[in-house]
Image 1 (cartoon, rainbow, N blue to C red):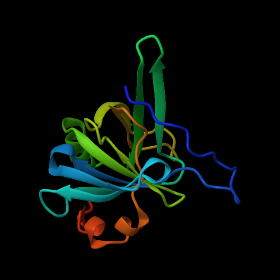
Image 2: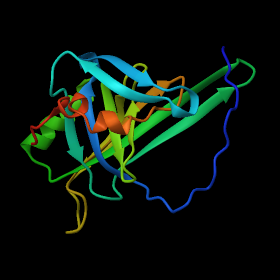
Image 3: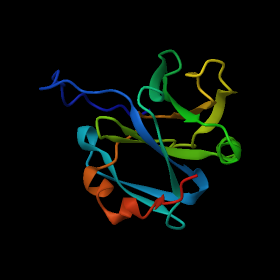
Length: 184
């Protein structure tokens, strides 16, 4: 296994950040044919996504403090192995026929997911092998303020932490043309 050299440290930062997910963009993994990158090491980012058509990513806005993404490194020194498990948790409210269909289709497909963090960064999940549903729950809720909908979790494994999308790419039609304007 090729190993990289440590080439930079990291400061605490000038100001406080904010956590959470503001929206997810989801596509069938088969529809993404290539992912291009720019930079290397600490500056490596995705600067292009090629798909078989336009509008392959569907947008799912998230209510603050209801969804998350985790990346867990798992290493085995004896076997010289290291991988990163990614879990994306999405919440959908107001159960109806269209939500039932969304839950069904997300569960039946191998996906790639772009998570937009509340900080403004975009993270690409499922680059190596996609993301598959691995759990969740649907509920009617009991009290008036309870969730009436679904919480779904998706899991993927890859050899490196997920990459971020370059801000120039996000602002370009290369990204915006990939987003389907259809909302349920």
